[in-house]
Image (cartoon, rainbow, N blue to C red):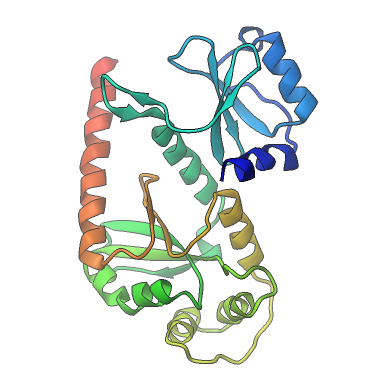
Length: 252
């Protein structure tokens, strides 16, 4: 996994842009190293640790020492507050990535009385994805809307990919999705579709398995989660987000 992440740093060259730190504050060694490697750094930030920078590379977070000698991966945790600083940043990055997808490029199963909505990367042929979909009424009845993005795990051009395209190109996408999830063979259809874009986004976000559930607070819930459990997790996240917001306000 570490090797995969490091390779991502070398594959997608992007111009170096500085975020919350000024160019003059970034050491010459780090700047030269990043430019030499063509690392796709979208942001360079200071961290609470002296001599350590945070790098946002695509949808990943890395850390690099001021002398440019060491590149680190993993979670940075404030042991006093118990806050996982890396996870907090990742939540925002995930939400920024999902927000690049407009609502008309998703298949949405809306709750009549919506309290929450989640975004789910799904595979037509995934067993747990099918189980999740079979309980759609349960999620909707609990006020949870489900927005689907396609992630055919067998890749672009595979049978699962073609099924996803046929669902999207159907006049009634909701009905087609439900039929496909139940194992029913749909007539093959082709049209302009966002399936490959969904897949690419999922790959950049590190999706390897489905269902991959992303909440409105940026939390990641990998795998199947029963309706009542998901509602409980969303309630907890909402309380935590509200508490964090109040703490931030009190600091101002």
